[in-house]
Length: 394
Image (cartoon, rainbow, N blue to C red; front, side, top):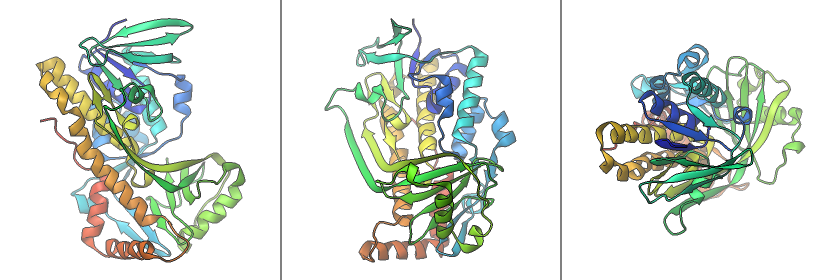
């Protein structure tokens, strides 16, 4: 088999990259370890930055998003019983975010890829990139017990934190930066109406809580828990009771509870690898970086990587600009570190780190007091939340 760009991973970043490339006449093949049904079953984020929304429109997969997605022009911070609205649109010149689940984004991209007849090979085993520093890299994989070879010009590693792409880079050629947080998020998904029209980020002495949503009839809630907590120890009733304790009384009074569709605990970490490129292999999304979910940046940061690599490939194939290949990593990292900073800052400001008052907790209180009572502070949140501008390759 032969293609121009081999894409490892059929999550939203791999599918979005493939869709954009195909629309520009750049041939690509996607290899995925899991089945398509499994990929669609993963419950993930649902807040899309303005830039990602625009990129999905450029990819021609915006119809259902525009019909079913919820445009939000604000978000709330809750400190104990005090609620402060961050006017996203008013503080950013009209920019907004779109609440539309990652599962739905993935479904739209899958259907679009099927409609144009582009190749995705699911349930592949032992995927392995080769000759990454040469002009003729290739990928081998197993399918139905047979070994196949896919020759290509470039390889996009969109296979996540645990994928093979980053692991294929020889030791000593990349540097990893990591911060592990001493807590996780217990999330619950339910077919209940959201408790508010906008997301609520709550800081409380018992720990952080988030009231989010996927649609007008499906809600997603999170509470901060210790890393040693077990999902099976949290009944639905226990979760709802704890959530009510952490959100403002007037919000708790309106909360509609119901049976959970899904419950899970996700540990929080910050992670970045530099550089994001080795020869003709480009790391995209979670393969290169992880952010704590507090800033709603994970999926959006992957989309900005896709944007950079997509525009680079267009320059290479349509204008012969191979000189820009070396700019990929530094272009992506400029935006990544700013998103890492915002996610770290929001996490530090809103979560409980200590049971006893100490210097850090006093700084947290002072930070919250300043931010929630300052237009400059609220603007900082708004500008980062709707998404910073995409970086240019030149």
